[in-house]
Amino acid sequence: MKIMIRRSPEGLSIYVPKKDLEEPIVESEYETLWGGWIKVANGWVLDLPEMASDTPLPITINAKKRGENGDDS
Image (tube, rainbow, N blue to C red; front, top):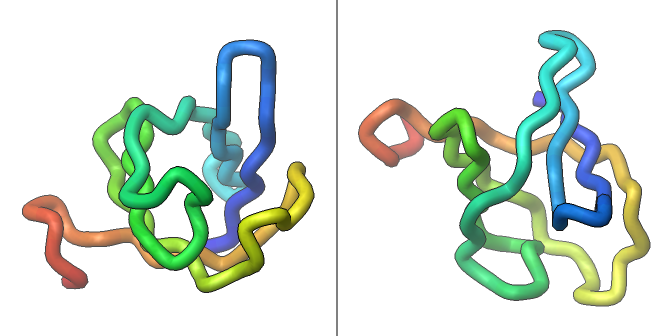
């Protein structure tokens, strides 16, 4: 799914245009975000693509949503 990741005074958040949904990122596998998973406040876990650690924000990317139990279904 296409998401936008941006930085705000409260921290990092995602915006999903097709759902008109904005949620804060509450946890991430890696401090640099890229190549790992992130968890957002609504409980979604998204896998992010590999990118350079200094990739500027905001950025629109394709992320893969994991299944309810955390696997790739």
